[in-house]
Image (tube, rainbow, N blue to C red; front, side):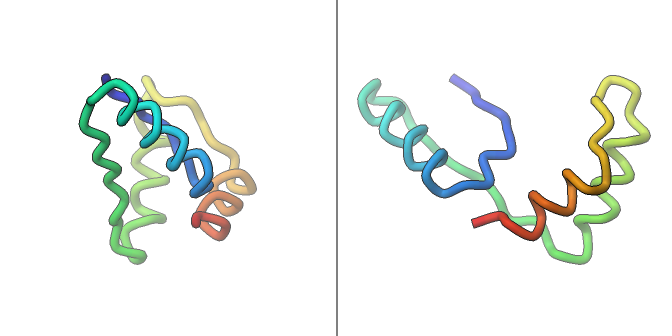
Length: 67
């Protein structure tokens, strides 16, 4: 199973780990962007027509509150 979302709250990621453990499935969680790449990634997302636009306020809220 692949679950792709922001999941910026630790509680949410912990729940996903429990679900995976109950299913005997691996649950790698990969989050390791270099801070200087974050704005460029946001701009790239906006440039991709297949991706929904994320308002600056939402993007900033997730970046500053990521646990």
